[in-house]
Image (cartoon, rainbow, N blue to C red):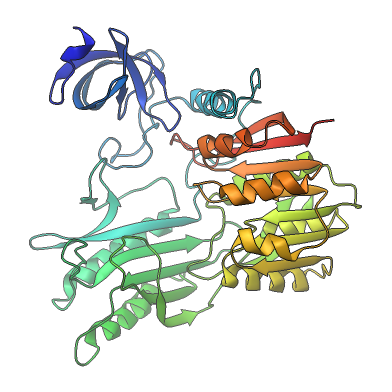
Length: 464
C-alpha cells in the first residue's frame, strides 16, 4: 500500500520492529514510519490509523495477531485495560536494554553527542510494589462512584482490585474509600467538564523503611450549608484508623482549579503527623530526613532513588574542597549527601515549602555548610557570588529554562551532573552546552519498572 493511502480510519496489519523513546511501538509501511500506541518488537498487530503527517503516521493497536518469541505472562489482572505498566509482558532484562537505548539515542540524535554510549541500565531493587506514592481518581458513574486508575488512552476509571506498583495496604485503602464514597448520597465525583462534583483524588504515600503512611483526600470546597461533606471526610479518617493501623496520618485538601492535578490548594484538616520521614542510604551515608507533607515531592521509588543519588555523587567526584550548586533540589536529599563531601553546597528550588524542609533537614543533620534559596531558579542563581566547581541539576520533566542553561554555560563549572526523568528534554538542554562540555558518561537508572519511563544521569566535563 503506498504511503499516500494511509488515512485516518484505515486498519492495517503491521509488523513492530522497534520501540521509540517514550514507549511507542514503531512499524514501517512503504517508507512511512507508523507509531503505534502499544506493541512489542517482533509482534504482528492489527492497528487503526488515527493521524497522518508528511513523514509519519500514528495508530491505535486493535489486537495482537502474532506474539514475539520472548513475551511473558503479565502479572496483573488489569493489564491491557489499565493505563499503566504497559511492559508487563516484556522480560525485565529487555526493558532495561530498551531504556539504555532510549538514553543513548536521545544523547546522540538530539544533543549531538556523536558516538556517545550509555552504560547498562541500573535495575530497580524492587520490580513490584516499588512506589511510595500513588494517585487515584474519582469518576461519577450513573449509579455509582468509581475510584481507581485511568484506562489506557481514556479518561474513564478502572475500579482496581489489585495493583502491583504500591503495597497491598494501598489497594485496601482504595477499596475502603470507594465503599465509603458509595455509602453516602451526599457525595458525588467531580466532573472536569462541568466543574461540578465533590470528590477528586485520593493520594496514598508510604515510606519504605520507616513504616509510615499518609492518606490524602482531595475534594472541591464544600458548599453545603452545614459542611456535612467535610464531616463525612472526618468520619472516613476515623474509619481508616478503625480498620487498619497502617495510615499514620490523614489529610483533607481542597482544589478549586479545574485543572485535573492531584494537588491540594488548601488544607482543611490533618490528623496525625503532618509530614513523613524516611531513612535513606546515599553513598554509604544513612540520612534520616523529613520528606515533607502531602504535596511535597520525593522520588517515587525510594530504593532506586538511593542508587540514583549514589551514582550521581560518584560522578560528581567530590573531594571536600568544592562549592556545589544543586538546582531544583526539592527537599534537599542530594544536597545533604553532597555536603558531607564538599566545602559548601547551595540548593535552589522554587517551592518555599520544600526549601523550608531542606533547611530543617540540614539543621537536624548538623550540616552548616549548606544553604538554600527559594524562588525561580533563573533569578535565585544570580544571588550567589561564589560560583560552583560542580553543578548538579534535576529539573522537572520539561527540562531547564533556556536562561538557566545559558547561566550555567556562563558560570562554567568544571563538572555538571544532569539528572532527568526525560532523556529527550535532557538531551535538548545538553545540546546547548555541547560546544563547551563533553559528554563523559550516560547512566540510565530504572525508577519505573514495567513502564517505558527511565531516569537518566549524564556527566558533563568542561572541555580543555
